[in-house]
Length: 259
Image (cartoon, rainbow, N blue to C red; front, side):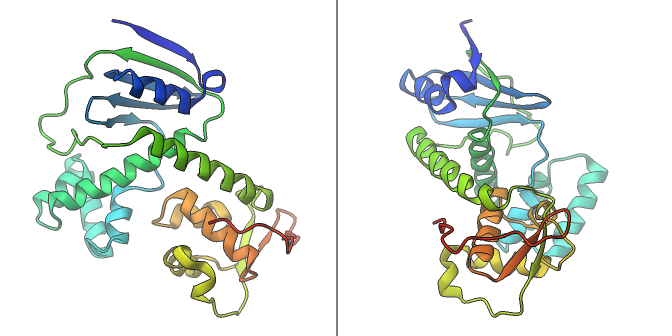
């Protein structure tokens, strides 16, 4: 069984994914960064996330809640049942009749997509690709075999765009322990465009006590999307950030706006 090993920093994740896709390889790709580990199954139909040791900010329940497929009370009940039964939340949600299977599948696809984009942010990681079939799927969970039908080039282009935006964001949000507070200005929707929905959710979380990390963790939106919305609020002057010493972080008027 052919095995390909190497360093992501040397080869580049985009090049690795292109190599596997162009050669129509089927097998299991594992990426390891310190204690973090992700395993993805490549098939002719697409990709399937087999496992991830990372704590997911963009959890399935949060996605279903944001998409208005369940209520906050529904989510609380599902989490309690999940703790008792040990089943996957999506499986419980479907079998209880709260949502349709396609709702969970769409939410899972979003979750998988974010996991893959997250991998592109790993500058130092080891990889191993083992050609062949993946481990058997869990028979008691019909949702575990979901395949993410992805165009690799589209993924690479989107990941590159996000990486460029993140560089701009990190010029201001250099520390996740920065505290955020808001000014008493009414936010103009036309200035925020696609980030308005995210802003509507995170503005109540910004109270002068929560840090960037805490706002990101409390948001139902993916980490990158939430960070982008915080950045835009800072650049537009609706909120301010304080460093660990309590000093206001300066935001240049010439700071670029991310998309």
